[in-house]
Amino acid sequence: MVWLPLLLSLLGLVAAISLSGCADPAEPSPSFDCPEPTGDDDDSVGDDDDSVGDDDDSAGDDDDNSTPANSPPGPPTVQLLPADAGVEDNLHCLVTEAAEDSDGDPISYRFSWLQDGAKTERSTSLLPAAETTYNEEWTCQVAANDGSTWGAAGSSAVRIGANNSPPTAPGLIIEPANAEVGSPLYCLIDEASEDADGDPVYYSFSWELNEVPSDYSGSLIAGDLVEDGDCWTCVVVPYDHTSVGPTAADTVCAAGGAVIPPTQPTVEIVLGPDGSLECVITVASEAPGDPTAVITYLFAWTVDGISTSVVVSEIQAGDTNTGETWTCSATPYDGFQFGDPGEDSFTIP
Image 1 (cartoon, rainbow, N blue to C red):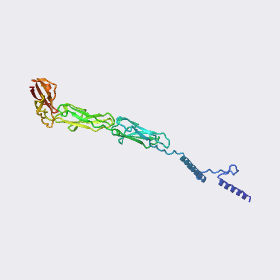
Image 2 (image 1 turned 180 degrees about the vertical axis):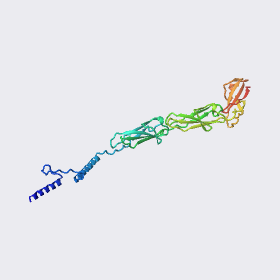
Image 3 (image 1 turned 90 degrees about the vertical axis):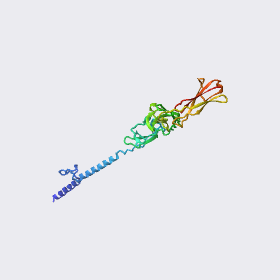
């Protein structure tokens, strides 16, 4: 059969085309079209798989090129100067050791201040002295930034006047000690405060009226403020511009009712055995309403009606002459008012 070999040859060619997808164009082949690939073909799916694989490779490449995580800078070392700051000192917040950044990024700083632990609006490295007060604690905080992240803050603190010695209490008196109604009162420092640091000491004056703080300051109370029965207390506080020392106080009371002077004394001139004259108080004066008052006497002498310079109670014998008449006067004083003088006269025999 002649057609049998021809049939076998055609079958072999079809098998070859099925295996390769398409005949090699370089080889002669029967004239027919090669089918176009579709998404349903296994080879097309395989290509899609290869594409997916390529995407995976691409994703892997992206992971290899990602930016490393940023590390925040560490805290800087901070020092607040002066360490022994007083109320007249500006505070300077210094970064004495820079913050470290493991990524090598450039660093900038942010300053903030705490007053006795509370946040303030200050944001510079300088705190003026005018904004501080004695015994306040000021803390400076400094945080570092690397352009992306703030790091932990370093800090330093000082207490204003912590190392200063305060002045001692002054000595204090009010004059007059026996206040007169309608007369001014003077608050006087009779013993200055001492300061161990050698600082100049200043004094703040205030007054209390009948144990109630008043609006009056300074060392003087005008006379029209001094009324019957009122008690005025002067309070003085020493201050060395950094520390406040202990206070001192003194009180006087204006006598209530009419002010009565001491009574008139009785005096007698006694001739001594040596010819001297002595003015003797035979009946002492009294201070009405104040039995504890200490009364002193001011002596004065005249001879034949002419005043002398003698102000003591005795005249020496050599200062007298026969026939002269000497008169002694003794005026009582209770520390507040003068009374009427007592007098006596004696003629030299």
